[in-house]
Image 1: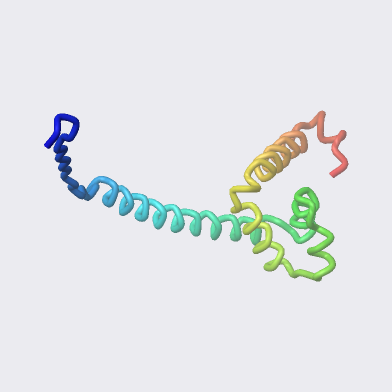
Image 2: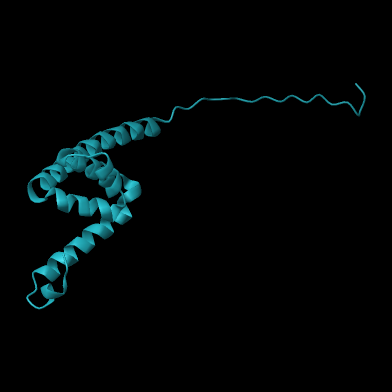
Amino acid sequence: MSTNEQNIAISYYVEEIENQEKESLNIEEFMAEIENSELNDDIMVTKMINYRENFTVKELLLICEYYGFSKDIKNNKCNKEQIIEILVSFESDLNNSDIVFKRQNMWFYMSELKNDKFMKKYLLW
C-alpha cells in the first residue's frame, strides 16, 4: 500500500427498539374513545328526551331557524322525532359547538327575561 491509500473500516449496529409506552398509550386512547362515545351516546339520549318532553314542534322549529335549517325541515315535512334527531345530531357535532353554545346562552337569557316581572313585557316571544 502506498502512503495515500488507507484502509477504512466502518461498522455499525442497528437495534430495533419497540416502544412499549406508545403501544400502551394507544390502548389507553382507544379505551378513552370508547368511554367518550358511550358518554356521548348518553348525552344524545338525554338531549332527545329533553326535546321530546319539554319542547313543542314550534319551539323546535325556532331552534332550527336559529341554526339556519328550518326551511329544509319544513320542506321535507319532518315530524317531531325527525326534527329532534336532526337537532341532536347537529348539536353533537363539535364543528357546531360555538353556535350551539351561543344559542343555549340566548335561550337561557330569554328565559331569565321571561321570568322577570318587569322585563317580560319587552319580549315578543
